[in-house]
Length: 362
View 1 (cartoon, one colour):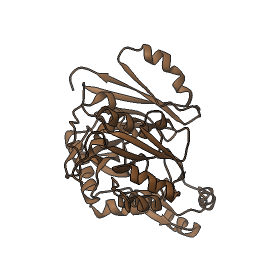
View 2 (cartoon, helix red, strand yellow):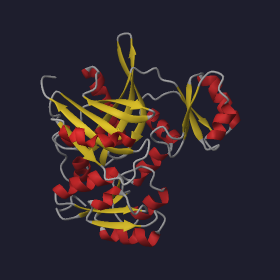
View 3 (tube, one colour):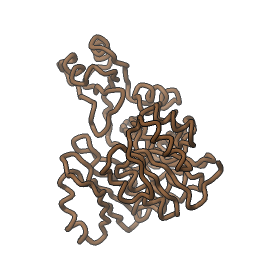
View 4 (cartoon, one colour):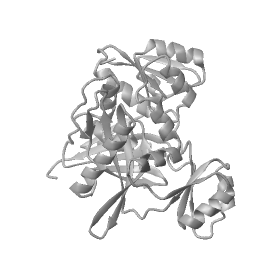
């Protein structure tokens, strides 16, 4: 396949807010979205052209889905590996399923990044309480114990401080395979949201700065408060990761910025093989949003411009009952409100976001 024609159908695994925004971006370009999810009331179903409601393990449903679409992509990285492998045998899948395998396991991901000559936090593999004790003695405290799989928004991880009960912490994470990460004394957290096309073209947005509250992204500001040299180095790291994994689509690479005498140092934290919360600012703050960019990439189309609007762009998540501020946000001049259509408000649940573009000089 070189490129799809307008009117083609892109299959999306997962039906959350990311799939919703992908479907809307594709529709503007004449691309249909067929969403596959086991959750009947997922918000993406309100805006897609076609739907399949079935388990990710249902091979009959997966075969019908693959036959109905021209390419398959996904909105989250925890798609079962057997699902991705089955679909790859029946359809084109972008990003390729090998990227899923890489990013679903923190240990595999960190070894991959290290193998590219890119710095990560110091880490140790942990598969037992004894291994945890030995790793903790080498890495010191504080350190962070994380499950190797299925962790996001602070789930599946525990901060270990001096004197912590290591056995209890391992039990709390279900004795699952883990990594222990040494603490990085970072000044700020940043991310690179970028895209790689089917032809190998690469375009990155401005490096953005992220603020987390209770382990959930609360605020993203573009551009980040880093030197031009650090920004260029961050983009080059993302390019190297995308090229080494033969990536097609939008990718996000989360990094720590460590301030040292004489400059700044970057430490890669995690890779997200999909559109990313820290890229939501591009919906109103860039020439091409990350969602349109992803649909362009997986369709084999030229990538769009990533130039930022204004001097600064801010994106704030609306988490839990913060969504109740929607009337005042609608009344605020210059604020762009995006609500995800979720039927139930819960603490810690991302219900929407608001972006603000600030004019002026950089």
